Image (cartoon, rainbow, N blue to C red; front, top):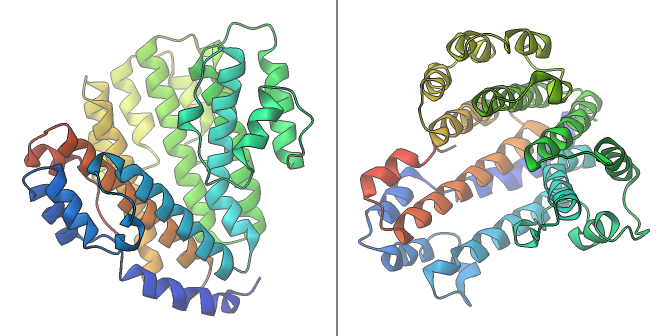
Length: 333
């Protein structure tokens, strides 16, 4: 598909970008004396239309969810290639698949964590997975669920293994979509996501002391860091893992965060570094005239803004000092 077909989408998105959360917006919210005052600041932003029925700061999540749904609806209207939408929103389908597999196999009620942002109605997915109802789901989703049930049949599996297995299927889907799009930005984005997923799998497994045989098949091929290299390093000392885990990232913040986590640091700091890395990567779309890059970057920038608002309100509602909240928020687009 020609990039010129994105001229209209680019015009719409460039206008929307001017309304993204700014550094000054975040600082005003963080420096507010309490959650109620932060919510008033929030009300002055472009989210105001969503707030007519929401009065309490404790309900901010409803606003954010509705806002992301509206963004999805706009992007669906203006994006000429459905593969771009699949690349962005299939993550929510696979998130729901993980939840419903856990609900069935671990007998847990995780419905409060399900997402409505996917391409498949979560109610249909729940019926198909939990109730074994012959509900119509896309062929690729049906295959993933069928394979997962076979993989875990009569096995004693935990949520971590289910997550890792489905993540492998999800990234396999992303690689297919990126290949079909034939776009360097999309391909590099997926490679970055694969590296981050593999590094997280590697480090968390090491921290938990898991046996390599239980999860090595869940490493994903196709990133900048060879999956085979991670597997070969698994038996070595955790501190030696810093070298291999940092190999795919030309970013000082990421390298330092991995080292810090390995040495006993907190997981959220590494998560922040990875998310900042993504923002730095997508910023190159600001200098592209038109194309799928603009759609991909805008949604990820919007999702990052929502993440920051969530971090701010979580901190405010838990009476965290402003300095601590500022330390936790991510870079902006």
